[in-house]
Image (cartoon, rainbow, N blue to C red):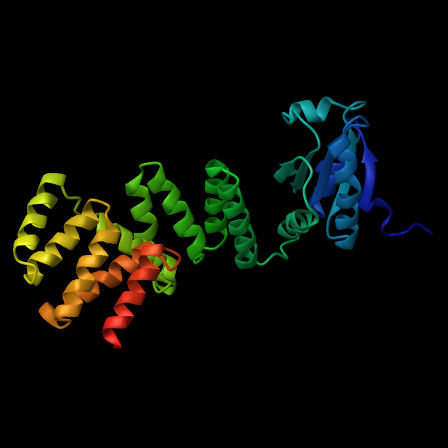
Length: 295
């Protein structure tokens, strides 16, 4: 009697590819692992990939092709390095990856093929990977992952903000702004979305240095002209001097919190939102504000 799991993992060849992969993928997804005996990463990946496929209990199959002996299909698919893994459904390649992968990535890969993955949870994992890429100095890889996470879950604020910030870093303010403007209503209260919107508000009116100097002279001559001081604070923000702007706004609030409908306090909060909770400007500014409001 034949074990039902016998064909879940099997070796194949160029000649058998049509039957073992193309035709078989009309039933369940078939994963093809292109490897070679001399390939160290292949030997690391193969046993873990086999375990992951067997754990799926027949929902996917694995076909292994030794490219040292059978290189025809690999060449047709454009495989230039191994290990190379392709997934087929209904006779067509639908997913894949290059190089060795951690067990978690293999599990996610198979879950995508079987339809068992939770898009929102997968998006969170991809965002975490994007942040790791940023920390490692790979903004290109991070951008791809942020975009991929957003494709899985349009309500993932971290992916939306992460991609928008990369657009901004690259000078593409138009696409960055579009990402925020197109954000679903369900995430408009997310702190990261609020912070980035605040940044756009603050970037709206850049101020020339000579204009800032003229405003400073006016404030120095009349320190308690709170309207002039507010305009000066806005000019400082436009010049990228948020810390200096905070000092002037704190002074104004201390003098008269209610002036002009608490305009100084409201603008100060916008700066805090734009800076984010981890910013030194935000942390110190909030301390000073608290000391005034709750003294």
